Every structure is written in C-alpha cells, then in structure tokens.
Length: 344
Image 1: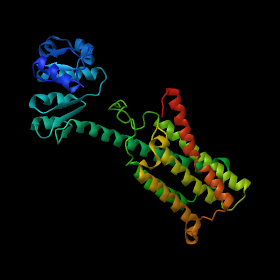
Image 2: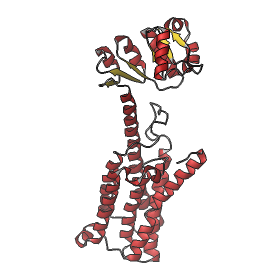
Image 3: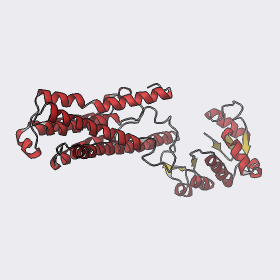
C-alpha cells in the first residue's frame, strides 16, 4: 500500500508507520514530497516508485503522476480518495474508489466504486467478492464447454469408428437439461477458494479462456467422450446387451457430474476444498444422479427416453467408469502442484 497526502512529511510518515504502511526497513522510510515530484522526470519516478510508500505535500497532478508510474511498472492500481483534488487520479487508476459518506460528488463520479460505509476493510471484501465471481464464471464456462465437447466427441466418434448412434435426440436434450442446468447454476455460488486473495491480479485484457482453460476443456471433453465410447464398446461387443445405449446415456451423465466436482478449483484438490463447502453443488449433483436413475428405471419414462433397466453387471460397469474423470483431473492437479513445489 502507498499513502499519498497533503500533510507535512513528518506527520505523513508517523501516520504511515502507525498504519503499517511504512515499516521502517530502510526502503520505505523515505517520504517523497510534491516539490521533489515536480522536479523528477517520469523515468526517475518509475525507478523509485516501488520503494516509496509515503508521499507528502502533493498536488492533484502529482497523484496522477504516481498512479501512472505504478501502472508503467506493471501494477494494477487501486486509488482511494474523497475530495475534488483526488478525482483525476481516481479516474486514471485501474480501480478508483471514492468515499460514500465524506466523498464529494466529483470524486464519486470519477470513481469506479463507492464505499458506502467509508471503511477501507470493505475494499478487501469487495475485491474478494469480485475475484470469486470472476473465477466462478470461469468454472461455469470450463464445465459447460468441456461437457459439451464430450457429447460432441461421443457422437462423432461413434460415427467415425462405425458404431451405432449412441444417443437419441431426446437423450441429448435430457442430458443438456439436467447436467447444464442445476450443476451449472450451483457452480455460480461456489465459495472463494483458499488462495483467492493471494493470487496476483489478472491483466484487464485477459480472456476468460486464458490460463490453460482452453486445453483443459479440450482434453477433459475428449476424456468424457472417450470413456463413453469405451462403455459403448463394452456394451455392444463384450456384454452384447440391448441396454448398451442406456449405459452410454447414463455414464455420460455421471461423468459430467464428476467433471462438475472437479472444476471447483483448477489448483486445489476436492479434499482440500471440502466436499460439502458448496452444498448447492452437492445437492445439484445428487438430484441429477437421482433423476437419471428415475429415467432409466421408471417404466413409463423408459418409453419416452428410449431407455432400458440396467442389470447388475451393466450398472456396475457404468458406475465403475463414472468417477474416472474426477479421479484423473484430481491426479493432474496433484502432478501440477508437485511440479511447482506447492502443498495442497
């Protein structure tokens, strides 16, 4: 954190030390004044800006100069202020934060966010909430896209290798309805991950598909489709059961539920997160699994969805394959953590 004030340098330094902004470690003891900033070239300010925590006797143009120097060094800058003289810097910062109670109308208009309670601690909660929402959007997209790629792979793959069409149109609609709906919505209320505030800010122009999300969607989608085709092969050529299509229908649904649990974090294991820390998702997964079983075992629904009751062997194979996506994704997370030397 950096403090920029119009107070006397000694007053500013004393307050900064009380707040823990200036730690007195040598680098942050120096107070840069507005007079020094006025004589300082932009390049010179950029060289020292990361080692200065207190600025005193500054004018509005100096605040803008400091913000621009920090941004030039690659920082995502949040600026707080309440007066008219803070407005230019609030506008120039990546995130301008104005005070809702003591702030002027000009500062509120220039800011991106207004603190209604004038409590700086609220900024931390707001950043955490914003990061959580952004990450949950990424989880939703990762889940939906990888699951849909899996459906495409199983249908096109079956046609390419000469298998019968594995799913009917009604079955595809049903899978999209129950797997995209409830679990997708539940991922949107996922609580913050343990390290959400420890990660650096993402670049403002970063795509939602950045940080390896594209490759994840592709390989997990291929995995879901490949395992479904494996079940189709077993049902057709090994068990030779007329219920092979129901096996594919069911395993595709169950595999996607494993994927829903796996995408809760791209770094931490499900054990670290805790299975029941998102009860909405647990309930959505349980309800989806129950609805799928109802569709394959209730007689009048069998005629609608073209399903058959699965015997012990057929259901056993389906259940044995179903958790593989979750297991494989969790193993891939563990491998990445080991490579980075991270503990879960």
